[in-house]
Amino acid sequence: MAETSFWAERAVKNTLTDSDVAKIKTFSFSGIGFDIKTFPVLKTMIEQGKIKVMYDSAKNGNAEYDYSTNTIVTGIKIAMGFAEMGLIVHECVHAVYDVAKQKMSTAVSESIAYIVQSQYVYAANGPGKRLSHSVPSRDLVFKYAWAIAANIQEGKAIDPLDKSNLISAVSAHPFYSKNATSDAGFDGV
Image (cartoon, rainbow, N blue to C red; front, side, top):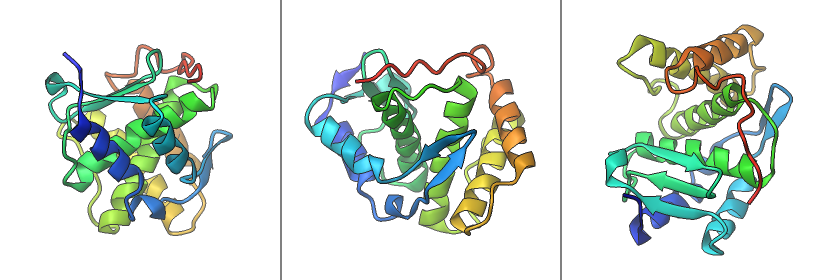
């Protein structure tokens, strides 16, 4: 059961203003731009209660953004490591696009969120420590998002093959495959 948590909200707000988060670079993916300058606006919206942050112990270290209730639900009370903070960054990307009522498919939404998450990890740890998953089909998402994030962080162009591979990997991921081509549903806050 999700509950209001000062600690979970603090973890999200602290992540939004983290010095390594500020190193995430602007990019465009499938015609949709992302700029880290949106994160301070998101923090203000959390402080104003327009975006809620809830803690759910059943999430057990995972998180999600619910656009229908404008809520970040996290199983993290204290974000101590790059993996936890990266996950928060990922969900905040979805919140940013919900605020903007940005139309895009679920596959594109998740692709952008994984790229930003990977950029954060790259900025925090350098090029040698990418996120991974023990399930190969899920690891492909991290693999291609990492390749794109590394190129962006290093000032290089996004490789079209990596872009195509990332969208395919997200579309085949068990969490997203059923709705990959559907609208992500961002309806505003």
